[in-house]
Image 1: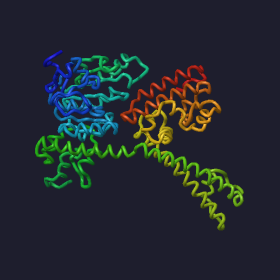
Image 2: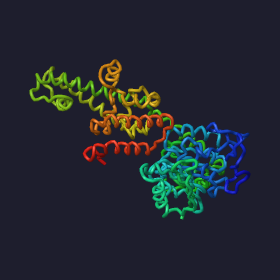
Image 3: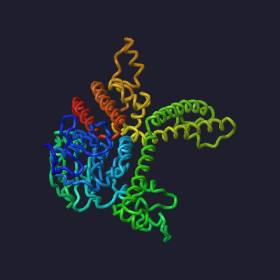
Image 4: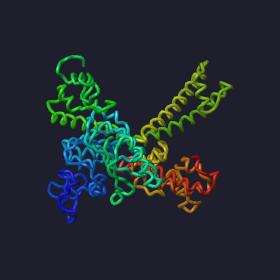
Amino acid sequence: MTGTDASLPDGVERRELDGDDRLCTRGPPEYGEPTDGEWRAWDARRSKLGGMLELGMDTGLSGGETVLYLGAANGTTVSHVADFAGPTYAVEFSPRPVRDLLDACEPRSNLFPLLKDARRPETYAHVVEAGCDVLVQDVATRGQADVAVENRRFLADDGRLLLAVKARSEDVAAAPDAVFDDVLADLESTYEVLETRPLDRFHEDHLGVVATPR
Amino acid sequence: MTTDDATDADAAGADPRAWFAVGDDESPTDRVRNGTADAPADWPTLAVESGFADDEDDYYAALREATLAATRAEVNERERADDRQLLHAVRAMDDAERVANELAERVSEWAGTLFPDAGTGVEGCRELAERDPDGPAEERVVSLATRVAELDREADELEAFIESRAPVAAPNLAAMAGPVLAARLISLAGGLETLAKKPSGTLQVLGAEDALFAHLRGHGSSPKHGVIYTHEYVRGTRPEDRGSASRALAGKLTIGARIDHYSGDYRPELEAELDERMRTIRARAGDDGGDPE
């Protein structure tokens, strides 16, 4: 697990940090993560997309993409995304975490914060451009498949959906595998699922999904 | 917006839905906040074509400025709907209700001497307020009754205000406790931060201070619940299980208050866990005490 890795986009590297091999991006630190010069560690335990990359999922990311990120929260993951991607739209619904997100946007010229509800894409389609290369989704709400389907309109036909499904947001009582099956079934008509992998090593009861529009 | 001049307003001619298609009394910041469109478009290209931006870099710089300003303004505005506002609103609501009832008693006592058919309470005042007074004494009574009816209406308005603001200031607490109880807990603790720092056992008996201190002085048993008694999960549970129910509810509300204060994101799974726990507690009573769901 050392050196450059074909599955990692340009701008994301594995580097030796504090004696450990860590995923890193280049940018100003945001949440007290360890740094090495201009590189900063991307903690897979705090980031579902980080976990997907750490597990070697084929995200199709190469660097420089236009990204729509749903569920940006306080900006931990989206700040890393903006470090290696192109124009990055960060949508988050709760005002309190957005305060931190604004701090992450301040030093980044390609990160655009939007205080909007990911379940209502019509409230930000006048801002977010069509034909995004990547749709990253990490929203803790019921109906995560619906959100992905509704936001299909922003994605280029050959774009990628990188989705972290949180089983407990759909139904705490149901078995996570049953929830994952339901979500994947709901995606079926709109997306072709390319790869799925449990993120349990970093995030309990989460499934990483890579898909492309049909 | 219909002129052919190469102005910002002309961008509206290109596509009126775009955030940069600014009308007369709007800024791009307003448009980012309030605009809508069913489908996205290639906004960067349209912006350059319509002359809003010189090139793509210029467009993204303007976009960044507008989204940062819009989001910052909206966050500040939404956060002003904070716990202090709720605290004052719920106290004002209780005051308005209490004073309305107190005055209503005075009105019905007085009105009884002038109008033999006068009703009692706030309801009676509302009806009295409609009457045409005859003579100075009746004038005073009807006037006083009108104040009572108005005060009661104000209490309702305050409740509606709390219902709209609590889910923003404390989404998890409001979802589980209901907006009014959430506001009451915040008010009793003195703020969301102090509530978030209290142990669950304290939240459980907030509002039962008299009984708690009597217990601590050695009189009587410890209270099982304070103001959370008003919650359906406590009141609707059979008496022998109310201790467990209050404990479980207080535990989840404490976690909710902490998430609301420190993180602020809404986590529906918390509410689902509470529902699940209550189902278990109520199952002890068999079918008759079971969850109404």
